[in-house]
Structure formats: structure tokens, C-alpha cells
Image 1 (cartoon, rainbow, N blue to C red):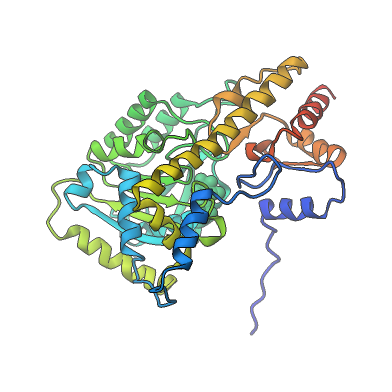
Image 2: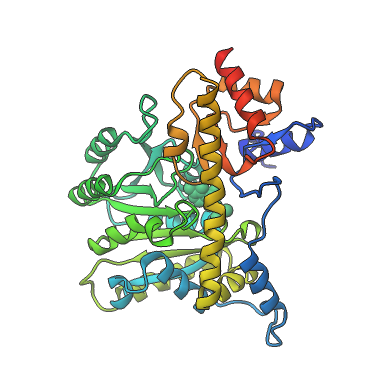
Length: 407
Ligand code: PMP
């Protein structure tokens, strides 16, 4: 018999993009997808990426052969140093297995698949705890590999900040040995990150309950403009000797969205048998081979050229500051415009939140009016992509938000 399946819902974010494209209004504003835009609402190719592209094009050795299963070695080792720090104890002790993946999504998937097969706790399968709310794709990636998912409180609607007490108590009540997914920085969708002291409390409960911390890092350097600062939490957990893993994306910080450059790093704790990290790498290789055989070359070549050249690396840091700086300007600009209009409510969270997004607190109804009456597009949870704002539309967006809040 033929398969008989129900119609699946459209991906909400990609559906939103399609609706935006169809809208003929010349006033329309796209605050939906998390991709950087310049002040003219155009995609921005980082100047350093253009340079790396030229280097690549002029390389007489370049060909289209397959990469190794684990990816381009000079790329994965540079990616490892970037996230863990060049002097990381885990790198020195040879306790890290790194694989090039299909961007951050592929890295989360590879990690999920690996843990579904090998995580020792709660036989036969551990539960995966996700922040409430989280990047919507987390739910389906972990569910698709057969793991069950649960939520821990994260965002407080009252303070529009972190619900640290709710989070710690949920992690404390979770069955021992659960997998805890943590956004390394620039939490999506809320823009709310734990402070270093709050991260220490999270580490304590993760330790006490023997949980497995799984970091998702999609915005290193893009959040604060400072690569080390955005990796602080991960480096802290590694210094504390946790067994952990990291899904790393270069989509946002290199602007390489469609090239799908990412990496998955598994970090073993200290004092494991000598060959345990090789065992882990060998199993990851089997999974990678069966899923994608070997990763795509182009994006990783670009990133690798930049990461391995000190001069290009510092130019990249400059580009990161350009992007994070423009976003910070837009945060200040939107907040000050709403405050100047005395729009009801507090707008302080727009500048205290970090990264690509602001979780505005606008209701689903208000989001709908913004879309239908004002042609301003955002996800229905009230999340706006800050990079969609620019000097040409920020007054209009402030006027629209003011109007729907008063309605
Ligand atoms: N995790 C989070 C939290 C994200 O926000 C994103 C980007 N939207 C990703 C992972 C992965 O994106 P990509 O596969 O494009 O690297």
C-alpha cells in the first residue's frame, strides 16, 4: 500500500518570509528572519569574506574533491580554538573530537543523534531539557532522533529577563542524567543571557544532578562583538571539567548563511582512558558518513582562510564589531523613540537584551495588526530581528509599535 500521510504545517519562519515577499507595499519592513542586514536592508557580505573568496578563487591547487568525513582539518582545529580558547585545557589534553557539520543545525543534529545512541543515562533514552522558549527547531531536531523533550523555565514575562530561580529549580527536579540544552550566548528568541554568576549556579545544579550540558552557539562574536566574551560560559564549563558538547554555527558571524559552515565538538572530561576520545570520534564518523558522507567545502574554506591568518582574523573582528555595533545602535534608537513617544510600558529590555533579536513583549494580536495594517513582519511571539531595523525605517516602526500598544 502507498504511504498515506497528513499535510504537515508550513515552517512558520519561512512562511513569514514568503508573506513578506508577496506584500506589494513600499512601506513593508522585514523583522522576521535572523539574518544580518545593512542600513539599506540589504544582505551584507563581510569585507573579510570577500577577501578570502578572492584568495580561494586564485588558488591554483583548488579542486572539487570530497573533503574528509570529519571535514577540513585546518577548519575544525581553528573552530575548536575559536570556541574553547587557544589555551584550553581540553585541547591541550587532546580531549576534543571535532566534526565539520551542515552549519549549526547539522551540528545540533549530529550531537542529538550521537547522544540518542550513546548517552548512558536513563536507559533506554535520556530526556532533553530545552529552555522555554527556545529556537523552534530544537524541538523537532531532538524529537526526530527519538529523544523525548521537556522544558525548563527561562524567560520571565514580568521582568523580561531571566527566570533564574525557575530555571535552577527545574534543572534540580529533572531526572538525574538529563541532557540540558543551553544557548551559549545571545539566546534565541529572547536575547536574554545568564550573567557569569548565574552561569555558575547553572553549572552547580548541572554538576549536582549529573546532567549533560549541550551548548548551542550560533552567535559567537555577533552578540557582544567580543569573541572571548561570547564564549565565556562554554569555557567556564570546560574549565570546570564537564563532559559537554558544542554545536557551533558560522552562519551569522561570517555571514555565510547559505554555505552551511558549522562544527560539532565533543569534549570529554579530564582523566578518561587514553583512547576514549578516539572511540567517540570513530562513532561520530560512522554517523556522519551515513547522514551526509562528508560536509560541503566552500564555506569551510572561506572560514578556514580567515581563522588561520592573523591579519584576516583581526579584520574579521572589525567586521563583527560593525555588525554588533549597528545592532546596538538600533536597540538604543528604538528604545529612545518609544520612550520619547511615552509608549505605554517599559522599553528598557530592548537595550538590555543581546544579539540578533529582541523579545518585545508584543502580543500575538498586536503582531497581527502590525503585519496587516503596517506591513511590518515579525514572528507571532513578538520577536523582532534587530538587523531588520535601519535609519530609514526605525521611525516608522516606532510609530507603528506605539500605535498598536495604545490600540
Ligand atoms: N541554534 C540557534 C539557537 C539558532 O538561532 C540558529 C540560527 N537560527 C541555529 C542554531 C542554526 O542555524 P544554522 O543552521 O543556520 O547555522
